[in-house]
Image (cartoon, rainbow, N blue to C red; front, top):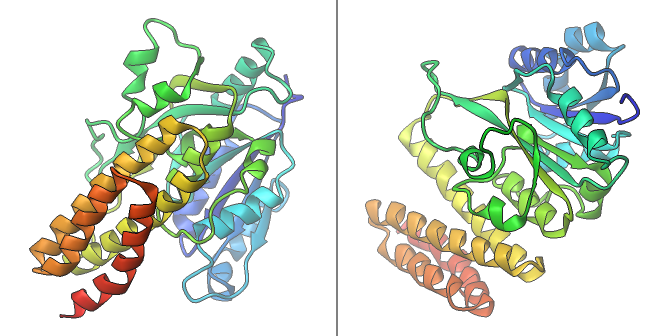
Length: 326
């Protein structure tokens, strides 16, 4: 069973305390044939915070500090550096402020892989689940990612099953990267993460991966915990949300022009239409009516044609910034 090698990529920046907890959770896996690749973003000032950790774990972990950058190089760039240095058959990811709570996660995956004759390279993606933990320590009761598929796909079964794209898209969400194990060849085939995106890069990666994947499996197991941060100030939160919406639309324009699976394209356009409406509602609250109207028109365009959406996105880029200054 140890013939299947898994690479685990953790990217981190200015969070050494949280990172060390995340790292310890990976090193607690009961499987032995895996490597941990850590990419430290943020330049010299950030790397200095990790010096003691790097020294303590140098025999078990490979560290790749990145060069100086005020805002960091971004999550996509950092993860791509990690992917570039992976040597495993499969690649997993973990955010530096989250944890894997299931010590059997990798061994269960490898056993499933071999028992179903997927090894070495016929299984493309393996999805599992995690719990979302609120700042008060409670578990979020609503669906956050794809945990709503558990009741749909599984009855009394406790082992992973093959699923198709249609089943995945029936979920209200999409898988968190902490819960993804992807064939390294597939990750490289799709070009890793889109480095032009600082938000929504994980959703973009997901759509592109399932577009070309031939065999996808879903596990019913919860393997980790994601810690939801405290809300930021309303001003910074609104600014962050606008940036996120813009990146969602940027990704959607690209995806509908490059993805071949029509089901995914339809899903992307529907999601983008909702994003436009959400952005319009936020702008209306701020009395930025002209910019809001542009998003409303774009929402309609996503339901009509790619060309119309692309044209309106260009209009949006030129006008929304001016309108926000009015």
